[in-house]
Length: 176
Image 1 (cartoon, rainbow, N blue to C red):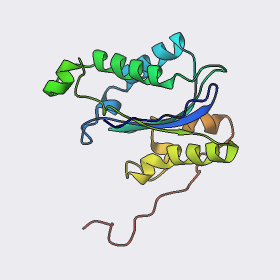
Image 2 (tube, rainbow, N blue to C red; image 1 turned 180 degrees about the vertical axis):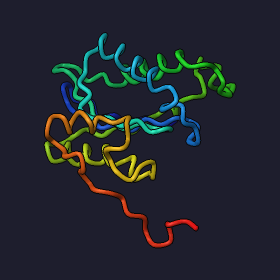
Image 3 (cartoon, rainbow, N blue to C red; image 1 turned 135 degrees about the vertical axis):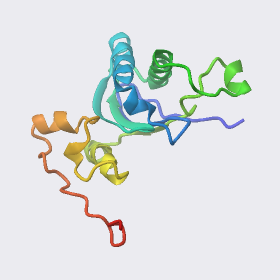
Image 4 (cartoon, one colour; image 1 turned 180 degrees about the horizontal axis):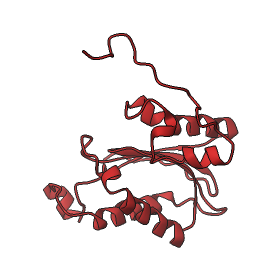
């Protein structure tokens, strides 16, 4: 079995990508209130700062900063996934392996984690997070995606409302 190595630095900033098992699903935006409640309840019990986040139909990206002396993001993600899964109706198909581990068939088991190295790394990942709905074709302007911390950063004056402009389709992507 593969031994997964995670970089754990107490108090560090981390970039995460967390994905649904069914990449054609839109559960995350259909149940955005349930996802928010799951994240807030875990954040209340085990504090961490959500510096940036974008929720797309089938995956989410976020940047967290953990408190000094704490590096346990794995427990936080386990709890968020579990609480979200318990809040939504059971309609997923479960494999025998998932049933044996008492897992629903909603989330991919693993997630991507990257320890942020410096302020420049943080800025690049924040830009990536906020541009992601445009990259995936959900909107043509970053400001048009509602499930993003972009709006909070606009209010703080970090981004302008028209940051990244309008996405212009490539030649051949204009339709009929």
